[in-house]
Length: 198
Image (cartoon, rainbow, N blue to C red; front, side, top):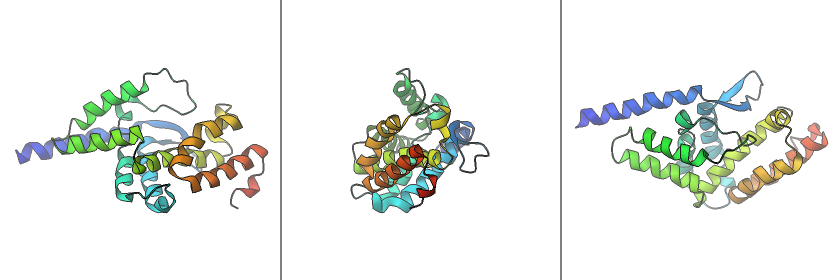
């Protein structure tokens, strides 16, 4: 029995290595290339650890880190869906099927635990999940601001669209971060880049 358990765990860990090959639209801050989904998840886990004090509600930073390490694993099957892309309405169904398959590689107990964390993140009802979702919007916003528009420029995203697509989620989970982000957005769209760090 133990032998089967360890092989299932190792099979899961091998499978999620594929997340390193799922490319996102966001560039690295040095703009040398696009980031992959595994890098994005790792970076968000650090955001959660470092910025937990700015959550709208008291959060368990360890749980938020776990959610963020898991949140994009479904992209191994479903691919990345950019926030500024054309949505066909099938994303949630594709991701749910992917969650069933990928987390199903794990032994019982771990499978249910990881699936529950992933579904909690998706539902965004708990304080932990709302903060995790806020960070998932905040990190690409930061990248866009500090890469002279990044995906906003590529997709011709306008000021009001940025406020609508990022604002409610960040505001709900981390109002202090939204305050900072809103200032960056104002500066970006007014072309006042020198004010970004103030």
